[in-house]
Length: 265
Image 1: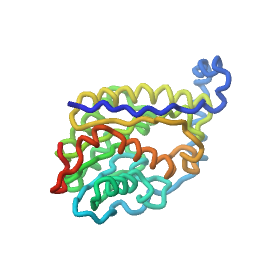
Image 2 (image 1 turned 30 degrees about the horizontal axis):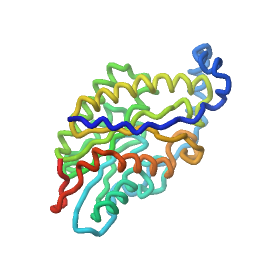
Image 3 (image 1 turned 180 degrees about the horizontal axis):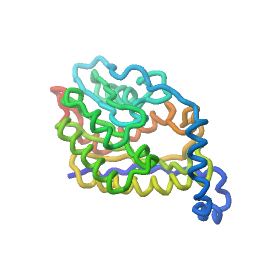
Image 4 (image 1 turned 135 degrees about the vertical axis):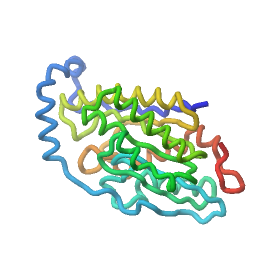
């Protein structure tokens, strides 16, 4: 059966949202959204994806593999090295919990949509994976993909990952509360937040319909140190929070590696 683990975050109050009545009237400013989006694309700082797309931690006799797949989150955008990304941080935690030698692999590209992420699925990289962490959706919503298209492409991506990683648990990162991101002015933030909630519901349904899958969401307020310098992408602190949430999942505990070093599913 599908795991339905939901580790919810309690988002901080939106920037400039002290007046709840004004927050509920964000749609009045919709004509400003395209202008704000254009200005943001021109002004937001640019960074590179992280170095170290493959790596290894631990020295135990058990062997495990974690794969991070998808968009800028799993590409380690704005981080120096994948040791600080969800890939490296999950590998470190798995090595410590199971006294294992853990390989990490990042199959990701900044800007990837759910459909484009299918091209990043490598059967060679995923064949021996014990855990696959997937992050997609934000690019789909900001690129104005329809919900029908996103549903179709997300479901196809998850099915392909499950087929390529036949013994792995697959974790989908829930779409974050974009209305609270420092980079976004209002009403752009509210428009993205509303669309994010719609797309996130599609992810919930996709996970509920699939075996060996689970999902994480935020469980704490979004503090300034959780963001990179662009106010949009996650910092090492937020990557660590993602990793902690994954490790706390009952699904992962039920799939502990056996004595032969292979995960039991």
